[in-house]
Amino acid sequence: MSNIAITWRRIPERYGLVGSECGTCKEKFFPMRKLCPTCRRKGKMEKLQFCGQGEIFSFSEVNSAPGGLENTTPYILAIIKLKEGPMLTAQVVEACEADTKIGDKVEMIFRNIRRDDPEGLLHYGYKFRKIA
Amino acid sequence: MRKVAIVGVGMSKFGEDWGRGFRDLIIDAGRRALEDSNLQGAEIDAMYCGTMAPGPLIGQEHAGALLVDWMGLNPIPSTRVEAACASGGVALRQGFLAIASGFHDCVVVGGVEKMTDVPGPDVVSALGGAGDQEWELFPGATFPAIYALMARRHMKDYGTTREQMASVSVKNHKNAAHNKYAQFQKEITLETVLNSKMVASPLTVFDCSPVTDGAAALVLMPLEKAKKHCEQPIEILASTQASDTLALHNRKSLTELNATKVASKKAFEVAGIKPKDIDVAEVHDCFSIAEILAIEDIGFFKKGEGGKATEDGLTQIGSQIPINTSGGLKGCGHPVGATGIKQAVEISWQLRGQANGRQVKDAQIGLTHNVGGSGATCVTHILKKA
Image (cartoon, rainbow over all chains, first blue to last red; front, side):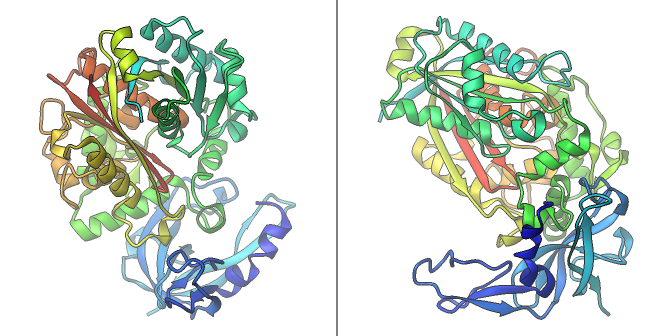
């Protein structure tokens, strides 16, 4: 994941939570899809800005992290159901196992996600935090 | 289309095998399968081998050619098959298709993974390739975490408990204790599972299958030829496969694997039987919750009742439907590319009456269920005593 182009071409989605909507069937997608899996050739994909609010659909407190995130454990990883419908995987900040529940309301925030190595590229993107 | 049969099976002893490398493992399993089939090797006209990640794990690609060479089978065509943890099951399906179509007459299908040559975090990263790198792994998911997300939702929607999940691991270790090829030939208690280190809540280290070195192999032939060649051919009644989104969050439900449902439903249709006709099954228990999802989605139990059924002992040997008599991925070990083939090896032994110490009485029909990643690929096979 260290090539700068990989992060650069995902900036609209990772920084701005931009996805897509099919103009034909109105289904919404995150991340962006170029092809509607329902309408296929009859689909008409357009960009869609998500509002950034949603709720926790499921979560886990991760204690054994993958390379690059060893120093951040434990962290809450969740599947967030966005207000508009689609779901995504993200970390929930300022949260722990004991105070997190399915159904908790959350909003998107912009955060550092990981660094490849001490001299490497810093990757930014979305995390979520609970709202009252 | 021709009917297809298994005429030889073999596997290496699964475990942390520092003395043997990638090619040694497949030679061991392949040699056993060939001896079991009573063939010399010259009859074999193609090879398919499932292996998920030799690139990241040992720096080796081009595994099809490497393995056929060291098996001493050059110059027959050899193809490496990759579908994450379903690589073995998909390789078996490729062998099945090759013989059913009439294109080949005797095929070796193998599966192999050498996982302990690199440090733990590198194994975690390599296995992460089975998920969506950009949208699951990048934000911090690991495979235990992805299955933990399914487990948490299953607990919320159906009241499944940690004790019910733990009872999957306890049962599979109990079965593995009677399998001389298993990585862990040792029983464990419910308390051990519940009180061990939490990897990704609610899953502890004993809810997770281990890192394993191992290989397994099968020899396939057309059924008609197999009947003349050997005493106990095992017919492949159905070989089906289905796909789903790579990322868990893109699915309609976190508590069912649609690829399992589609592949299994199709397999039962093709075989002309129902789930209740299955005498023994090997299902993909990469995590304890995965076995619960599998026995529900295949149709052995209603959705939401898999945990209770396991806790009540209905999946033990001698009960309603014995699941994972080999010990499963949890007890027997999970060398990812080998697992789908190992499942068919175990079912073949069961149907031949050769599963010493863990034999299901009078087993006639068995099923294997092999999953890639969090359910993006599923392969189901139904096997029957010919």
